Image (cartoon, rainbow, N blue to C red; front, side, top):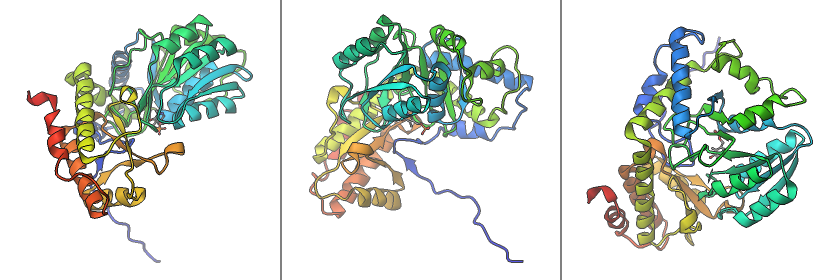
Length: 395
Ligand SMILES: *Cc1c(COP(=O)(O)O)cnc(C)c1O
């Protein structure tokens, strides 16, 4: 019998500076390797309670129905939509990037009547247009993306949730890339449903989607005329496991939940405000370095998020060749553009544990070297100093 030799698993070490996954924190990787418990083990149930408490703290909400969906961020997106929407209901989606488009696509698949309010990729949603559309369509749900990872744009939420409330609509916010990187204030902003993902600013591998439902969202779930079309994502069934009864629904991904718990503890120990400030410092340092090199971002400064930086690809640079050289020669992964920004931007993520001064400095010097080697006209030898000169923690 022929035998096939498979190489032993030995992934190369990479600096993950793309749009996600980001580099997990070492404590999180260690937590993954802890002994697996049964999903009804009393010790594990305690960990689940901890996770719910820690997630409420991270989302800044009192929502009882706060837990982690078994699946990536998109599963969290689908879970929120499938639980509160029924066929034929009106949904309004702000679409200024790929992820807003994904929300609209899922709502359409649920048979909803979807209105999209567009803004060009790279710009925030126009608040007046959002308000007008909300008043005109009076939807059941208004959905927007807080941090559009496909473009690097951060969206202001309170104006939108206020307009939604005024017509009795629920507000859903995608917090996949925002949670842990910039302030998220769900209760203060009166957001009814939100979801996130573990692999962006939570310093955790991909695999879980934190979600939270306000009392209004739970009331919408209870008032449904039809059953939730997804059995796996039905929050009323999941609640029986995450809530009091501890009834088996599906086997919880035990070790991923250890990882999430550890990641949330790491974040809490640093302090939320300190983590946000660190992301901001890395962003400003990166931008100063890029500007000194003669590069820039297509996103207006007021709309930029710190954890995902869109860089305009300079004239003469080959998008793919530069990304390949960064990976091959420096072990650095960055992202390309999506949709309307494909071939026009690079996306540099400084997320969670990956948001560090050493990563900013390593990336700037590698990028400069790769561009110079490719014959692209950039200012040489200035980026490192520019990046260091705005680093706030030296002063
Ligand atoms: C990454 C991301 C998602 C999707 O998450 P997956 O984990 O890839 O399923 C959704 N929304 C935003 C804003 C994201 O950045």
